[in-house]
Image (cartoon, rainbow, N blue to C red; front, top):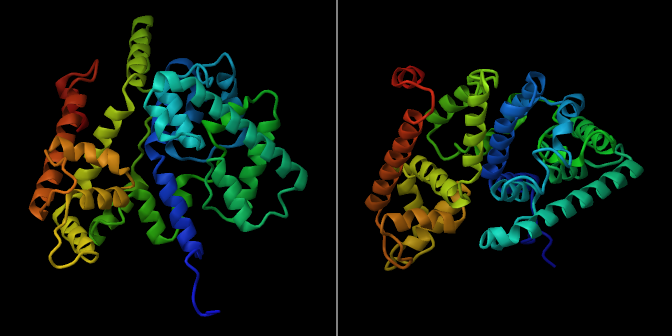
Length: 377
């Protein structure tokens, strides 16, 4: 009836990509936790060659099918990454990345863990059936959109060109059919044709900045951070500081077990403090208030709830997680008015708390003298 009007359900290509980026950003913490668990376990039980494969994966380097075959034996039924063997907290992270996690799973984690693990395995079977259909129908006839979706649902990098997406799918399907490669392996280490650095260079500027989480920072700072991200190696070799004897190996295993017992809530609060500290700067707070006021009348004031919802949307965190930090600063009343100066103060205190946490962690690292900590800083 109105041919010049775009329906409300219409989604442009850029909007679709931005939506996919936003969804993936919501699993960043879970993917990082899986990578940390994988790296820590590899540190004490993998060979040096296998450790390098894990290191490549953690760094975002290219990982081929043959490299994945090299570490595959550790992901079988008797290995440390069996869905029924991993700690509950790691199972939650895996469920998030696989796409089967629901909020109520975390309410009674001990009781819900077996159900959640079954959901993960069902998703494995569903994906494997999709692999079979893709193999029968062939990959050559898939459209660009279908290639993107197929890579996306498998957790592989999906921002590449059609040829690369097709090659990654071929690697995945080949590994999935290999009797010596447990299917579970593919949900921990993904076949990747190019390094993350190369892939990032191909992205549009705004999407690259969104992926880095720096889209709201001033232009001069964004440029410096992008340059820094291209030059810094964030994953040192696992051979550095390798345990020399049985006692050190036991200490490393104990440290690993302690890490897996940290609750999701503790990790979320630490991470949200860092996120809020970086976001709640004076320019960002002023912009936030200007945007919120656009939807209010002159006589309406900005409430804590307004601010929490806005911050959650901008930083890709749930409103519930953001509200836990506001509770700590006596701002728990959702209908209570809040000022710009209060928010700026909360941001400063979050930065102080994050810095203190980092300092304490550095000083308490086992086997390091104060001079070593200072030298590294």
